Length: 220
Image 1 (spheres, helix red, strand yellow):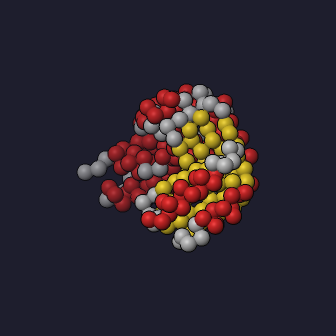
Image 2 (cartoon, one colour):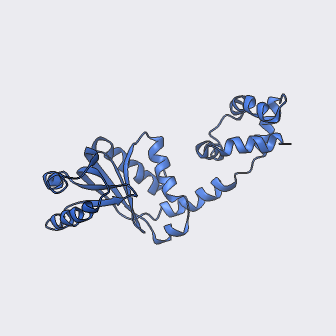
Image 3 (cartoon, helix red, strand yellow):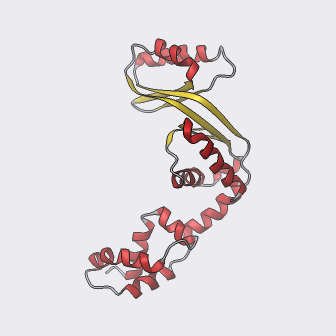
């Protein structure tokens, strides 16, 4: 038979944002208990007093999220330089044998300009190319016979240089994306390497995204 404490903890753990907010004492426990009570009673199969749920919540240990935040906060303070690029566009095409050849042609065109931005994200069924808007005519010419699945204009990117230890600590990407999500920043694309992390957003959001990332670095 499930205990009130076990059921309460399982329900709260379904929402990482909620568990983190509890760790930071940002949640009204009484209000949370009232919200959880109907679902807890349904699972346990009997009436449960609100006070019992409140006690179960208070007994929960900070656990994983507290320990994880301590590690990640330290890493965030060691973030390297940020690089912002504007006037970007992206194209997503359905994968095909001919797409590989066209991809090489595009790379040759990109290499003619040392200041060009280029990112490639290859999935199982589709491939996305992110380039400077000045390369629009080249992309559309080279891939004119390929099946276009989506295209977005007016994009910008923020690239963050991560400390090498980032590959040894899980949750770093989640930590960054969480803060952007809380501020209503919509992520269009994500590009990453071992020690670099790039978020692509709408041009109108790039200043706000940069400010949020700077706040993360400073620990504010």
